[in-house]
Length: 185
Image 1 (spheres, rainbow, N blue to C red):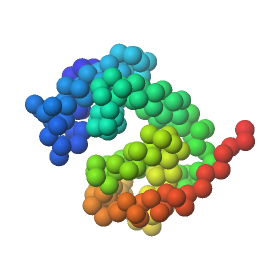
Image 2: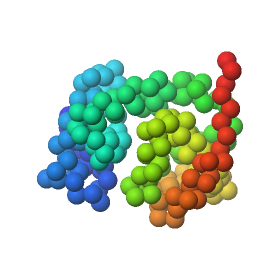
Image 3: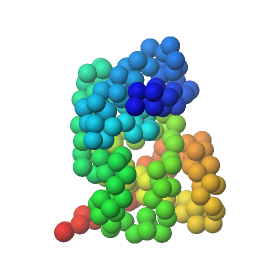
Image 4: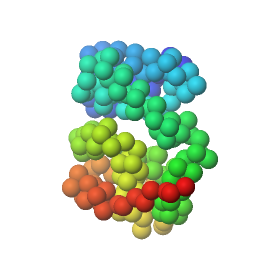
């Protein structure tokens, strides 16, 4: 587990020296990621979590970052996604018709650069997974015409370059237009 964490954290914001080898926050990123996997052995370490941990580290002291990250991750629907429990994910968000037309894995492939994503992560920390899924749905709606015409590899390549073309104004405008109806069951 520890070697996987060490490898994965090197991919967390590679353009930011602070999280890279010999950077001032690499050890903090490593210890919080590892501490959470020890705290929740039923979850363990999930690839990509270091991106979320890094965002908490940018704003908070180490102990507070761990607590905030743990609180965020321990929300049931958040755990469902990181544990990749498709039945719970499907149950939780079954009312989102657009995700039925586009593969849910597309949304999990989104890589957003730090600069345009920062305001989004602030809102995510405040509003939780509803904002995350409104954002995913917004991106899917914005580019549905492209996603429905190309193979998955092209979708992944497109999403990896998304931050270069998608302005925060365009993204937040689309996210604001997404209305979520809460399930009554």
